Image 1 (cartoon, rainbow, N blue to C red):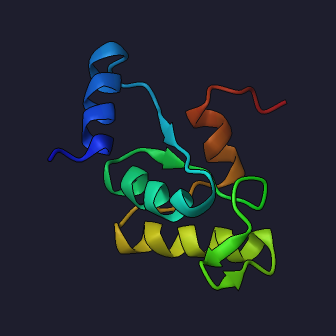
Image 2 (image 1 turned 90 degrees about the vertical axis):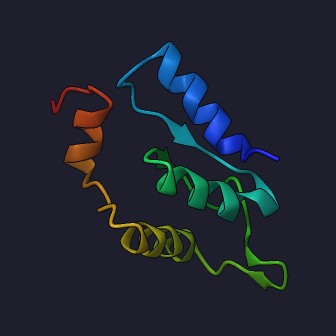
Length: 96
C-alpha cells in the first residue's frame, strides 16, 4: 500500500510546483502528520488547538511541549525550524 502522504505531496507538486505546503493532523494523527510532512520536505503545524496530548496517556502541559516535539523531529530530519522572519518570507508576507 502506498503512503498517502507521498501521494498528496506528488499531487501538490504537480499542481503547484515550488509552492510551500503544510501538513496538519488533528488529535491522534498530529504526530504522524508532523513526521510525514517534515520528512517529505513540507512544513507542519502543531498546537493545543489541534491536539491536547503528547501521547495517548499524557496530556500536553503546554503548546511549548508540542512545539518542542516538532522541533526535535525537524532536527532528526536535518530541517531547521524557521524563524518568524523566515516564515513570513516563505509565505510571502511583508515584514511591515
